[in-house]
Amino acid sequence: MVVNEEKVEDILSRSADYIIQGFIYQFNKTLLEILNDEEDAIISIEGIIEDIEIATALTTRAIQCKYHEEQENFTLSNVYRPILQMMEHYFDNVDKDIKYKLYAHFPNEREGSNYEINEEQIKTILQSRDQRFQRLLIR
Image 1 (cartoon, rainbow, N blue to C red):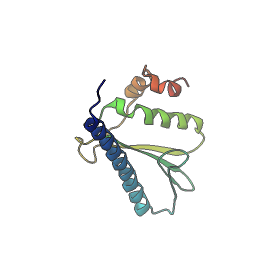
Image 2 (image 1 turned 135 degrees about the horizontal axis):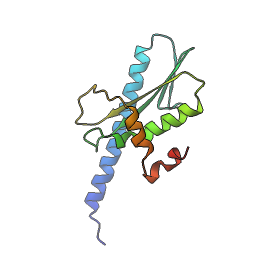
Image 3 (image 1 turned 45 degrees about the horizontal axis):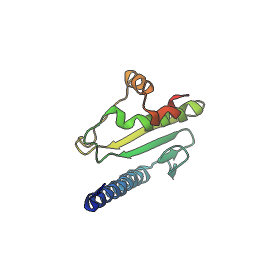
Image 4 (image 1 turned 90 degrees about the vertical axis):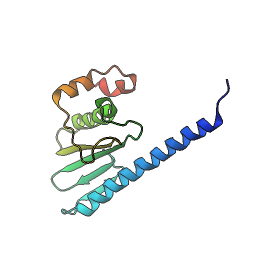
């Protein structure tokens, strides 16, 4: 089998670019949270729970950031994993006041678009047969 080295290099280069863009996306969101903090919260980056954790005396906001450059538009399946991870954490910490938020970038979505995940969509996620999520679904 002959592999076109230019194509492999292009793919690796694009993957590295997307990873860097994802870090920048998360960094920008973190910076916004720090600049907008009015409660002198403790802000953790790459915390125990999520990418960004903002803890006050009464509550914690757990924020997950996902950068999907190759997926042009939002689809529910693109956010299965972070939603399942948030649900897993929630069920392990029902006694704590934690508010979960997911920010995701898709190049063809209007900036500031807001998608509310409803009960029917949660049922769809929980019925997934995708092997990548089975550890999270077994619970």
